[in-house]
Length: 143
Length: 186
Image 1 (cartoon, each protein chain N blue to C red):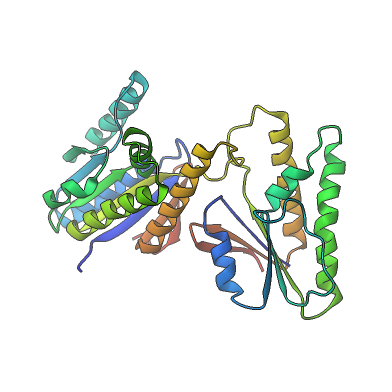
Image 2: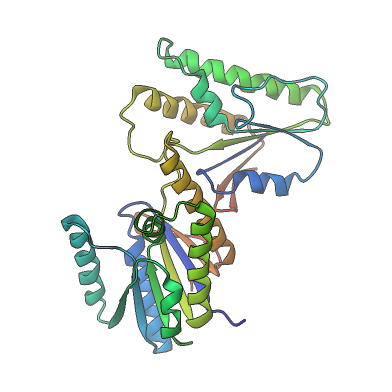
């Protein structure tokens, strides 16, 4: 799994498209409201774009942060498993860094930042490769 | 077309990006024995902004080098002809320029705004020897729900990407320390 992060509108998607020009299936949060589920019929490079948006939609103030984190991690793990099941599969995750603003007034937004940060840490730990994109320029954080 | 060197410097609020940019501009102007120009896009509309402007002016005076200041909130391309091939220009900053186009001039079409900023930069590059552009890091915040802010971030992100692509040197300043993202800092 390859995890790609960086600020909003920094060209993360564009960079990934350059790295993986063909044989890709894109699942973007602009089209999918919630985490898409893996499809065993897919045998290619799968790109999941907009993790921060899917995390936001999983938010539920009545649940504990641990449960929310696990819930998102489970969705990601289903894809990690999909990737493991066959050699010709590859998973690329794109998540926007939302961690460097002022502490939000709304509890839900604070929760979103927490869950997103924790999930990214876990994903980065799992990943074979991690890249940080800054206005189109990549910096490999892990390989 | 012969174009000048483009240097992009960004960072968070009070990261020391302006001070770093000013030091770099002074150093280069001194080495090349040329004139220093400062393009100020900020409109001192209230006392807080006046304070900020004054602080930056005092800092520049301390540099011991004479700056020529151009107060130009928009359409920097209109003053491009004032510069010559040896000049070093410091533009501080892109976010203010963008604000002025969007909210003072009320140009709502984001594509037009992005093009206008590009046009300004191209015009300055085609005249001066070196242009140093300062901007802000504001794209790592929680996503905004309102269209206005989201649109603003989108244009800013695109403008930054274009500037970085074109830049000979791109630097992110963290707590006063320059991190070179593109090119080499000599």
